[in-house]
Length: 357
Ligand code: OGA
Ligand code: NI
Figure 1: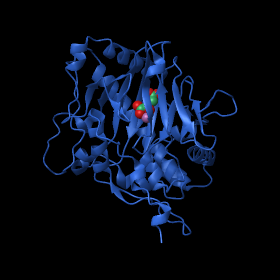
Figure 2: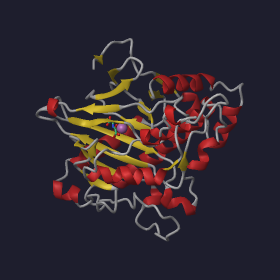
Figure 3: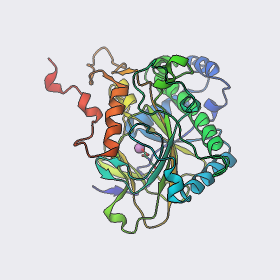
């Protein structure tokens, strides 16, 4: 497959300043319903990007550069800690949050280390009261504060701000797909006590060390993200992220652009939209050029949510069978640890044409 480095095939940048300027979700909901408010440009740009690429950059996202610098710097500090210190937060089959250094994607080992964490609702003091049956992500695992001062607070703040961006973008997706801005709210954690344990969103620190033989491995093998959407802070220097452009059948670089985040659509949104929005294959090449760090927020629905096509026009058929999100995540998570044969993919739920009457 050819790799396209030409200026003609580039992931678009969407300026979301007008979205960020709205002070609350209520204001945003109202603005998205009001045709006189100039969000139309953003809606149209996001619809176009989501349809063609499933990838776009956002600029003017409102997160201060100093905050981002602090986050980058503490991320480097964490991965520079001795292995045994990192391992003190190591994730286990019972608790999928924490440090890990050998994730299997498509049953191959990625050339990277990760630290996974979630929001306030995932702290260890959250009572496991049995009000939910699926708890694949369990609790946040932190280092003692004195080991890396500010780590928890910096990460938590980043989680909260990017989650807000994700929530707002999903409102735009809803409107771009012909639904109300509140439409997807029902599938997401909104602070409701009972749903605390069912929230699937998670953030990750990725560290891709220099690879001595980059041709023989990958930072992350090709995959789609299973969530609704991902808000990714890329490395400012090392350009190894690629997205597969379906129409052109080409891998295209998604180079770092200063002061932007990269958004990509996940499987859940692809299913909800009945394939109108694409969850694109993407991958990270290994490189000998330098270490790379990236920080995605995976914005996912509740484990209890049943996912099925909901944006189906009158002349269309649903292209997927309904499936429970928690069960899907759980099956995937098992595959992160050992080779369980073919990893479960969204295509598993696809209704083949020949099955239709
Ligand atoms: C991921 C991923 C991209 C990157 O973690 O799922 O696709 O640039 N990361 O690190
Ligand atoms: Ni990904």
